[in-house]
Length: 330
Image (cartoon, rainbow, N blue to C red):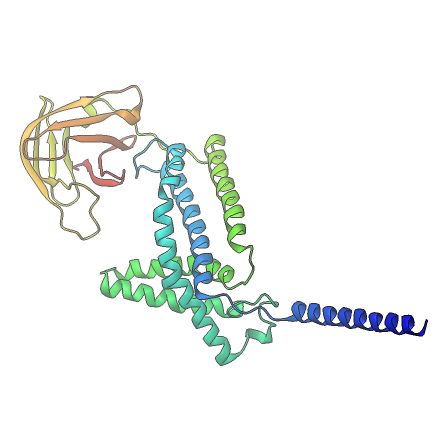
């Protein structure tokens, strides 16, 4: 009996020690601080966030373009169907932005925190293991975006106005991505994919609802006749295209770019020639066009645009962006 009691007490002691050890271990695990995310994880999460933000921008741009005489395409729905094709480009731009904009922002925010402490004595990120307190992310983003806008102006020839516009736009892209990328939660990438897809679907649906309900009006070119396009048209740079009533066409230094729409300030080829023209009538005003046959000019199709009483002739590049526009000479 004595031996059995002794063994029982020894077993209980070992069991108790094991429970204490387990509790202590569990306690250590529970309170152990989570380290900041690695550079690779920051870039991965920021890439996902930037892809989400840029996709939402594209949805908004598609909705805006549908209401304007500034883009060519099959409408809002057709623009949305092209979004999957943009994923590789979004990943490229998102990854570049994550490495060049978001990661430096978090590094600078961390440096500011170490130098000046947490803003307002805040408790930081609430134990989420972020890179830096969120209060320093916005000032750091402002500084990084300003540096990038300045470099774009110096090395890429951006005008002061363009750089000034790009500055707050870059801040708006950086801040959400940086605030999320600073967290050390395992579900972040899955959460971005899930909730991001839902956000895009909701935004696209709201845009369609706005168009369908009449809150926003889809642009439709004015109905035109052959007589409406007879006259002299100017490209705004000194070039003209004269469409005579007898079907003859005369181009004098009119814009004649090829491929893609020219950038602001970029030199563009012009055309001077004499030939003929015809008017392509259509039941749908979006299909109306002027077709020219000018031997030395690349441009041969000009689509009707503008507004009632102010018709314009548009030529589009391979991406559906406006390449050249002619308005009636006054």
